[in-house]
Amino acid sequence: MVKKIFSGVQPTGNLHLGNYLGAIKNFVELSNDQTSECVFCVVDLHAITVRQDPKELQNNIRETVATFVASGIDPKKSIIFNQSRVSAHSEAAWILGCSAPMGWLNRMTQFKEKAGKDKEKASIGLYSYPVLMAADILLYDTTHVPVGDDQKQHLELCRDIAQKFNNDYGLTDFLKVPEPLIQKQFSRIMSLKDGLKKMSKSEISDLSRINLTDDKSQIVNKIKKAKTDPLPMPSNFGELEKRPEARNLLGIYASVTNSNLEDLIKEFSGKNFSQFKESLSQVLVDKISPISLEIKKLLNDKKYLDEILLDGYEKANKIASKKIENIREIVGF
Ligand code: AQP
Image (cartoon, rainbow, N blue to C red):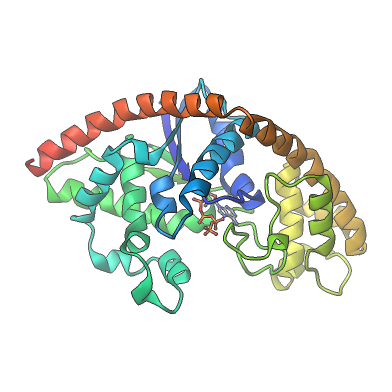
């Protein structure tokens, strides 16, 4: 069976190691799998749920495309496009929003985290963000969605919305219920400054994350300054539970090198963090520097990036237009 893959990344700048290990690395593997058809979306409609500078947004859209390509996604094999160009996304979001109960949305933890204490001032877009995400996925009859662990709840909601719409209109399998593809280990990369907080683009301190555009000296410096605890490196798996920073750094190492965590613990057991950090910096530089250099190169060729987006738009629009036409008929328009 052909797997239909859909996933999105917000063009909100500072794409980081968490985005790479939690999502993009998986995109690349799937895009090279002959049995998968992949659609990767730069979700600019999602980005404006919090205020964006219009000029910066344009640059960030291109930078996200450059990051996909630099990481190894071939735009000839996968569809890469930006969401706002395909109007079916907004239309489907509205229609699905008329099926989705508010009670379901009220449970979304990302809204609670992002809206903070002053929920009254958060935009309606931020609140209904997961409905738009459901529309994105369901328009393409997606079977699998590769995402980081932080998006798990939104994906469960997407599945519920698909079933609710099918039930509301007496359909059995019109909207396909997708499966999440979340890495079993290290699906949530944490901040370098706090092992209990997710590594994130919007965190003010740049030292909290490794950006995919960081150069060698920035990577080495950030790992040197990464928070640790005063003990030597852990000697067994059980210790990690109470040592979130050690767990995160070891997890990053294991994920970047595709190695086994138990073996890594054995290798570094009892050593100083400084020794481990030296090795970690090296594996990160080896992995991230070529991507960073390629992103910078691609950003000098805006024409090429715009061509990718135009070609992706044409292909995506063809698929999404057909589905939204069916949806329009079903609801009686
Ligand atoms: N820390 C993370 N660990 C693992 N996966 C992560 N992802 C994001 N952060 C981590 C995954 O990256 C994909 C794209 O994310 P996004 O750009 O759509 O937005 P996000 O999840 O809101 O990312 P950020 O960095 O946390 O942005 P802000 O600061 O704006 O909230 C998704 O698959 C996500 O799971």
